[in-house]
Image 1 (cartoon, rainbow, N blue to C red):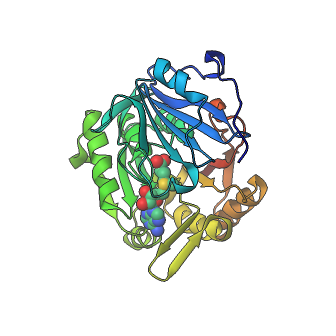
Image 2 (image 1 turned 30 degrees about the vertical axis):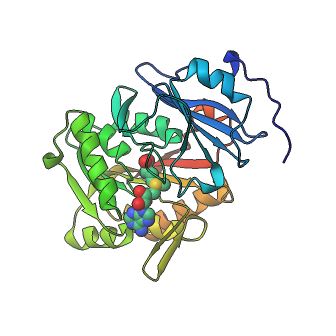
Length: 299
Ligand SMILES: C[S@@+](CC[C@H](N)C(=O)[O-])C[C@H]1O[C@@H](n2cnc3c(N)ncnc32)[C@H](O)[C@@H]1O
């Protein structure tokens, strides 16, 4: 393993990217394989290498109130290890564009919020109108639902995991939103989309942000193979003039292929796209654009 020799200066740390925002990617060096997320002064360092990068030690002591680390290849399963500063033993809140989200460093899969979705969350908050019905699928801890609900929407949040649905309601409560005024469905998104279609339920906006690979019983889903089918199921529920925000966090899927798949799914239901944008990732992620996003209005 090559020695890491980067010179990290305060200049290379990204400042808070937006007002009232205390969580963001503060440092990244893809070549060296080091990424640091800042959660209100607590750092979560991820590395390609199986060791904590020495060059971060001095900074970690000075800039961060606590530092946790995990190697990236184990990120899906392992809670991070404490390296320096205060122990983080409880959940804590961070702010993003005026909303609050609960972070848990002891959670294995992720710490409560995917920071690379910051601009998409903001856009949802900006475009939703009071009274809109919004469906957030593969919702994790409900970040998109919170933004939509704060803008006055009636939200439906769907995820396989009861733990994440409960976390969503905790995020609602933290933001002064009443979970009882919103809906949550636990289970497979594909089954729920079909159920909603049978029930005649429609939505003004739908967020589709599936994991790269998902298995439910014998059925598997892969973003690079099955996105058209997912988009087809979802678009059937979108009101005329409504929107879909489709995301795919899949390095091997090109933007062109992703767009083709989504459009193919929409057309298969004889719906027409009237406008389409491809929002970029937040600038502090360094232009990798591994997260593809498409926001489409359909009639
Ligand atoms: C990549 S995360 C989604 C991140 C989320 N959209 C956000 O912005 O925070 C994937 C989520 O999908 C859920 N999930 C995976 N497969 C699923 C399925 N077939 N049906 C419902 N939820 C699923 C997981 O439990 C996890 O919470």
